[in-house]
Length: 204
Image 1 (cartoon, one colour):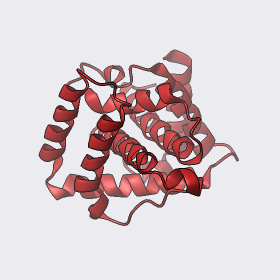
Image 2: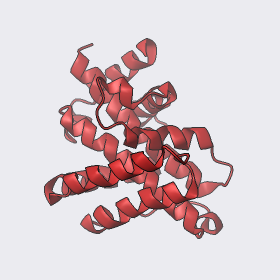
Image 3: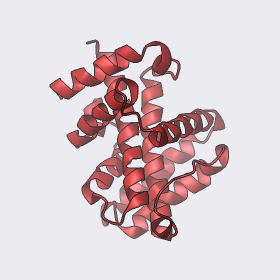
Image 4: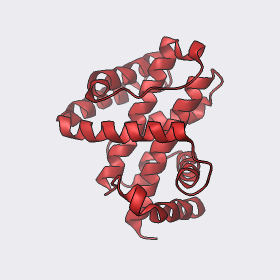
């Protein structure tokens, strides 16, 4: 397995992992806090030596790689997850063309400084991350319509946590593109992505 394919699959696993956390947060108050924090923490690694510096919690790679196989190979495809993925990849392209990447980097640096004093899942930090999404990304294209428990989705903190996780998904989408990932590869070179995900499951 070549390094580029492996790294692309890791970044793509990061996207799906974040979107699966979106699903959980939208459906129940009993979501896995550690998994949400793992996804949000990827936002804070802005100068990595290698890709695994970003995905320090290996459950992101493991669970995200399993999601790749489920979505691309098996009959377990989650159409809701697919819809979220299409929305994230579209917004990432529009973000790249918007000229706002520098502003995004500075806003994330501010969050990084704040996490010296607060846990990343603290409500205030979540609010600040969500505001980055609202300010820089929400207006770039059609909003991603999130499905879940209406009573839970009605809460402000749930909406903010969803936006924060969507920003995490977009962060991984940016990385995937930087590593050479393209949407057409998901159609024409699907087997290569599946094989890379399976390789990462065995070796990471």
